[in-house]
Amino acid sequence: SVQARSLCVRGMSWTRYQESATESWPPSASDEGVTPFSRYPLQDGFYNTLAYTHVVIGFTYVSLMLWQFLATKGTSEHVQRGLVLKWIALLCIGGGWVLQIRHSWFSDPKVFEKTPVLFSLPFARSFVSAFGTSTVVSALNCFLVGVKEKSRMASCGGPLHLFLLAATSVSLAVDVNAYVYIFREMSTTPVWGNYHWDMLVEMTVIGSVF
Image 1 (tube, rainbow, N blue to C red):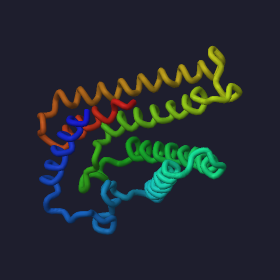
Image 2 (cartoon, rainbow, N blue to C red):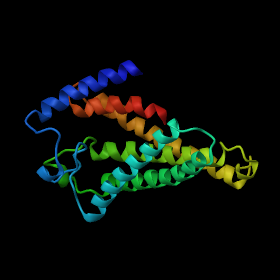
Image 3 (cartoon, rainbow, N blue to C red):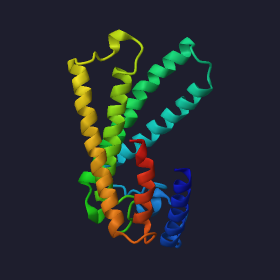
Image 4 (cartoon, one colour):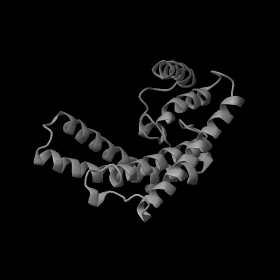
C-alpha cells in the first residue's frame, strides 16, 4: 500500500508539473479567482463561505487533535476538549459534505474550463459520496455502538440497531458504486496517460479505508 501510494504520488507530481509548468507556485486566489492549492474556482457567496469555513474548522480540529494527543490523558480538561472536538468534528464532516455536494452536483462545468479541478465532476460525485457516507456511518457506529456506557449503546435488534444496519448497507453500496466508476475509468484511460489516471489509482488506495 505504501509503495503503491509512493509510486502514485511521484507520477502525479510529474504529470501535474508538466500540466502546470508555466503557472506560478503556490497559486493565489487573487490571480485567477481560485482557492489556494486546491485551485477550486470561486463561485457564489454560499460556495465560497462553505470553502473558507471548512478550511478554518479543519485547521481548528487538527490543532485540537494534536493538543489532545500530547496532553495528559484522563484529566477533566482532556475530557472537556474531547467533547468540544466531537462537536467540531460534526461541523467539519457536515460542512465538508455540504461543500462537496454543492461542488460536485451543482457546479456549472463551464466554471472549470479555465481552471480544471483535481477531480472531474463525475469522479467527485461518486468518490465524495462514498467518502461522506462512509464517514457519517462510521461516526454513527462509533458514538452509538462503540461506547462503554450500556445506556448509550444501541441495543441489538432494536430500532436504532436496525437503522445503523440499513445505513451501513447503504454506505457499502455507495462505496461499491465508487469503485465501479474508478475501475471502469481506469480500463478506458491510458496508463500514466494523464492526471485523471493518476488520481484514479491514488483514490483506489486511499478509498480502501472505506
